[in-house]
Length: 340
Image (tube, rainbow, N blue to C red; front, side, top):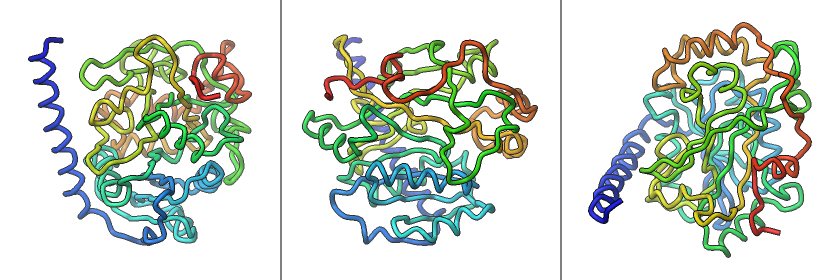
């Protein structure tokens, strides 16, 4: 790219970031504080941001996992849950949450709402932005909590940390594998696709566009480039001038998306174990198809929702059984880089 083209790109992205920040400022009016405990946030705490809707079955394990990793405070936006999620959150001393009944899709899938909270509360903190069905693991996570990881990232002068979203699924029809809230979802979701991934670098934002896994194999086999993208940047040393562009797949400034080594080596990365395929996904798929709130081109995903509603079996002969982070590192799905 020529210097002139590079300057033009930088100019366009700078204005795009400003527009996204302005959207977040406008969308703050859609949020109603239910429990605001942010005065308890300490200067060095790691914060977690998430938008949820009807996640009461996942929240107990989600909160337990991230507390064990060292998250100091949780900031949720509840998008009109009616399953008891709000009551559950209200009872947690380390949770602040806001509610809204506005459109999830028109808020850029919750990114605008969380953007405002990150502007107001995230500046200067390491911030983790994840969905309720995403469980972050990384090299040595069981013995080295997030403060150890973020401290090391600070020493390396790194501002962001990347992760692959890995779809987990059971061996058998989805609805037949019953999940007990509070238990580990990986007692049943203990299989994954290990080797069918495509990756490219996006030339504008420099993020890695990764597709594959069980959704590409089963639901988008005739159009794999329509499959959901799996590369994410969930952990960032936040500045109020930062903005997510597309979920947590990419950010601005675009330097934050370079969570990989550009000189042929490896940089530390993690995996977001994706718990979408609990037994409840079968019943929820029909509802989500009607709501049309989860994809920008929702009609393109009608077949996907229909397939999930039919109670499919995602397992196949080439599926791999999950044993731990060292397995994922050996397969090249995460890396410890030079963090030893």
